[in-house]
Image (cartoon, rainbow, N blue to C red; front, side, top):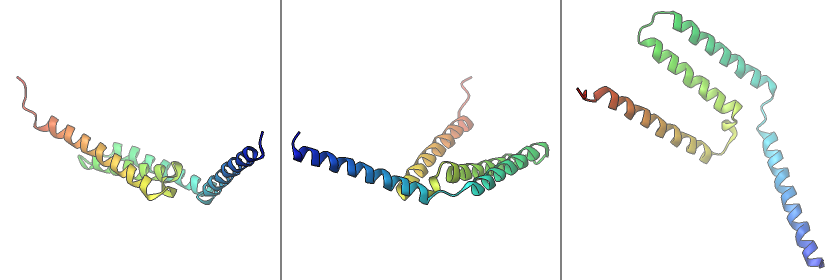
Length: 121
């Protein structure tokens, strides 16, 4: 094996090692610690308890709105802390927002279709 080939292999290994160290450091930078995870978990449990409590109270159509609002808050908490979206780049957040907008558009269009569809019979 020539000396040039060995030198190029060493350079490649060094580049991979540097990249792995950078990824490790980036991961350590956005670590929030166990206390934050426990607080988020307690918040999720509390919001679930509120949702269950609201299901037993007669609020009419307001109950659905409250349940959906609580579900959105819980989703944001899970995405930000347990899925680490809070610490990702802006472009990744934009991708997620576009996916959510497309999903909501499809759901809204589906419900409009069901609401205003002429009966077949």
